[in-house]
Image 1: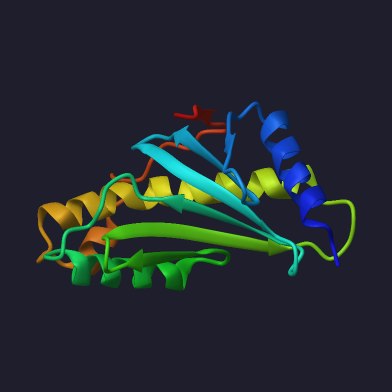
Image 2: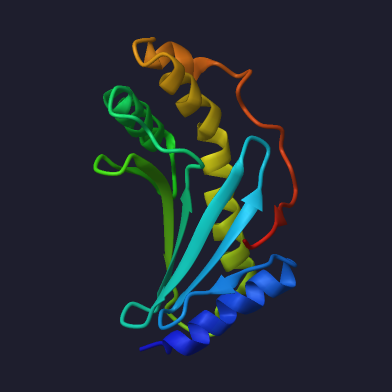
Length: 167
């Protein structure tokens, strides 16, 4: 089985190579960071799982969803998930948080730094892409979700890199 410590080290090397700042969570195999994307500052954490030889990258929506908009938000997230090839959106109805999660299982050495940075970029891009749509739903939860998701004017510009800064 792959060693979590070496997996966490590879995650840190990936962040260092991309010049992304991060902080370690004491007593856990987790690093956290925040990225300035087109629409919002996106909180992100990466966790290493020893028993699986896997890492999970999770980005979080910069605002919480109120109960009046939850049904419409969940509808939009499920419609969006259908279009995704990797990763998925999740919502916690208890606290109103929305996440994008992407996981990779590493079968053998070496653990490629480029794979890890690609997973991080995907988590940031997907959360940044959905943010204005969810903000529009919060503004008007009764609008047509299919019409809203068809809008292209809310899509962010394509960027090749991200600025990061830890709190």
